[in-house]
Image (cartoon, rainbow, N blue to C red; front, side, top):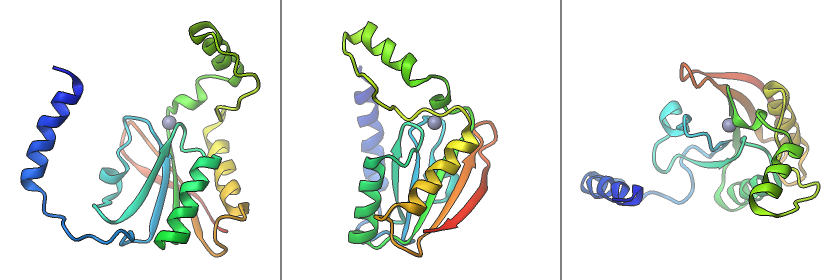
Length: 168
Ligand SMILES: [Zn+2]
């Protein structure tokens, strides 16, 4: 039995209880959340985000990368979101390596030279969060007047704490 087979059993149970037909594709709370892919963080559960409420965009570190901004542009321009929560977390794996270290591992494991590729690791979590908020504030692709909240999730307690808020 694969992990996917286990998931499909769970999905069968989910479908039995499913009662969220007819939701708008426009997020009801006009919110986008940009957060890390860390498996210990379930933003929907931690913040009471229900189906249809918000866009949740995830990547390694919850970084404001070009592709995250791509999704935020679609979210804002096409789907009406107005507030952005940038949610980073304690003990993030993105502060456990450097670009040079990961590039060396890729060379060893895969035989690929990625050159100067930036995987967007950070050494100081608070600084990483501040940088990403600033990137969004100053991005010409984020609508002026957008409220951008930077917050941290504590993986040991489940607590979300606001760190800074800015307006684009
Ligand atoms: Zn992380």
